[in-house]
Amino acid sequence: MNEPDCLFCKIVTGDITADVVYESDSCIGFRDINPQAPTHVLVIPREHVATINDLPQGGAPIVGNLFLAAKAIAAAEGIADEGYRTVVNCNRAAGQTVFHLHLHLLGGRDLDWPPG
Ligand code: 5GP
Ligand code: ZN
Image 1: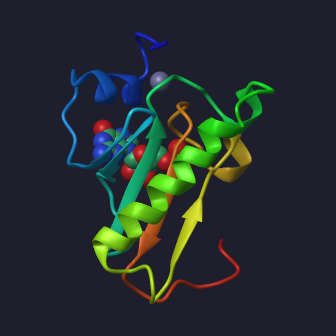
Image 2: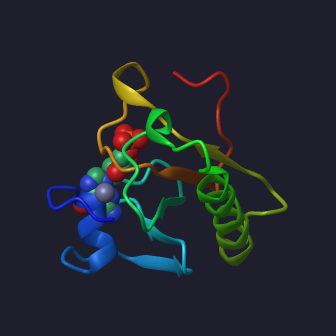
């Protein structure tokens, strides 16, 4: 299901353009408009889920498919062996700004830990 006012649903439907690097039946991956690393791809489910808190009880495949997509994108970007980070922000304190579940895939440089 798509939400009419959701930015990422509009990317799924093609109403808003994005630099898409990965597509499957369940998810798409596209480059972040404000990249924080040489590779910064957002992986989203095609179906609208606002946050981790909104995942249905049977939603394990939604999450699993996001990680399988991240694995494939990391390999395609050539960062799988060197290493990369996956991040899913949930709600205000974590800095979530787009309320359609998305996994950040960050790589191509050394990443600090702990995060800010
Ligand atoms: P959040 O802060 O919600 O975890 O991450 C949202 C991400 O979406 C941010 O990194 C932001 O740069 C990215 N973003 C926001 N609007 C757009 C857009 O229209 N296109 C793309 N490709 N990325 C976007
Ligand atoms: Zn959405």
